[in-house]
Image 1 (cartoon, protein in one colour):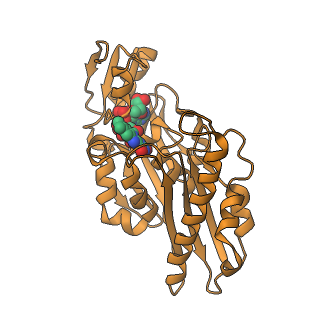
Image 2 (cartoon, helix red, strand yellow; image 1 turned 90 degrees about the vertical axis):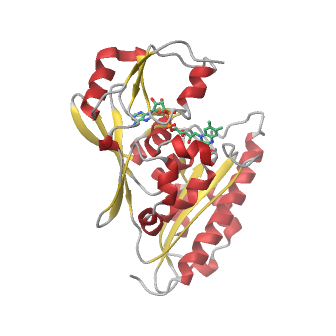
Length: 295
Ligand SMILES: Cc1cc2nc3c(=O)[nH]c(=O)nc-3n(C[C@H](O)[C@H](O)[C@H](O)COP(=O)(O)OP(=O)(O)OC[C@H]3O[C@@H](n4cnc5c(N)ncnc54)[C@H](O)[C@@H]3O)c2cc1C
């Protein structure tokens, strides 16, 4: 199928883009890589009179390593994110999540900002952003502001950005010291959105106690989520005393809106989620333990 007709706009700056969004109102939508929007338009699940193409705006491109974080322009393609050596060193979770995002052809066009703005509950980048407490930078005709990841994802494909706001960049904090990172997810075919998945970032102190832990979940609710109870349960504990299976089960506690659909009932997704969290925990802890000194 083909999309209904629309007017195509290619602004030269972010200010022009958000000016158009404000002027054209609900009939207008930003298009970046088009890897989520175009299928929706083609299947006539969505319809807009105006598409505002931000994919070539120089302001939205680039990756910058800073003292305690890495900044990525919203327009950076998923393929560039996955291949960047600064990202690999400073935000390994982002690098490791990237191969799970669709297929290479999709990642070649799809953008980090498009994925996060689209806010699919099973999307990998939204889950990485939430797990690492990333900060979203957004622009509108009223100026610029920042939104913490914890305040950004509010519902299925829904964020706290206003209709005339554009995501311009995302800042991912870096973790130092004896840290380990892992992503595990299960989907029926490679490249499909996951049924359920888990992301773990863990830092150990020199006595092998858990100094810091972040456990993110995807595909297990209307938004990506954090397993806050499981995080609280592991902090301060000697890591050798923690059974990965128990951490996985703890990560599933309090999930009250796990979807049931053609892929499987909520109970199945929850079991898969627990197994993925246990595997991610094991892998992240193994990596952290292999690092010798708090650097
Ligand atoms: C077959 C297939 C499989 C896929 N599998 C996965 C998967 O496993 N995991 C996964 O995470 N994704 C998957 N995707 C989606 C892919 O990651 C998309 O690239 C991504 O979700 C959207 O990025 P985009 O740049 O293409 O955005 P677009 O499709 O251009 O836009 C998506 C939405 O975000 C908005 N938007 C885009 N950029 C901005 C911005 N800077 N500011 C504000 N709003 C913006 C648009 O208005 C639109 O509503 C898949 C896609 C396909 C077609």
